[in-house]
Image (cartoon, rainbow, N blue to C red):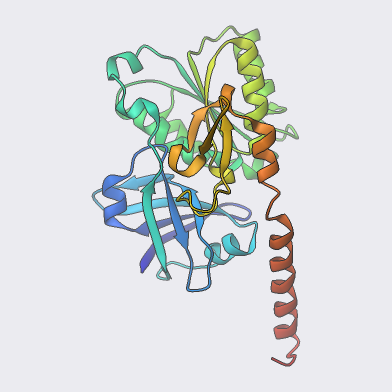
Length: 292
């Protein structure tokens, strides 16, 4: 059992939790993820690690309550316990084990879409701790869905905001802001790391391929069990079959077959809708004192 030592809301339906898991915290590296199970009936939920504190023995995760399982986790409070919290899993980001002097020569732009800001944060922090400045774009549909802006400003050289509706920062998609920075303002980047919704990463890669900028993406959104056993995260990368959970979750974005990956996102949609429907029916029955 793993205790929730801190919980806070970052935005509507987006929750941050610090979990007491010393062994995971001691081994965690940027780019890796954990598997979380709420209780005996809960599903396995892969979540990219947002932060970790080796001294406190805590690991921070960010949950967007969308489906039945994530809503169950998000409903837990400080002092409650998660049944399982397994990790760190997956391969750390490539630069972690690279020659630091070579890494310092690169100018990196992180592009975080929605809750993608959570896995971007530990990566930006890693660069900051090694004395390397990075730029970060945080994008969301509206201002109220922008998360971790203040935290990101503490570790990044420049933080840029974009909102689809123009309610805060740049008015438009993250790709529009990228074009503003790179094409119009002439900023130079050697590497773009894009993490967020699959469709966002696809269009970021289309743009960076056109601009000739190497790009890394995280395929966490298509993972299910996190061990490679289920095969749900099978994806084609450079004409080779890969599993996002064991071979990634990070890959060369210009080699990923995004159309195939996007199809995989829909494979459990009907089951999830049915679970949500059952949950609402049960809630309604309980509220009205119906029969068991």
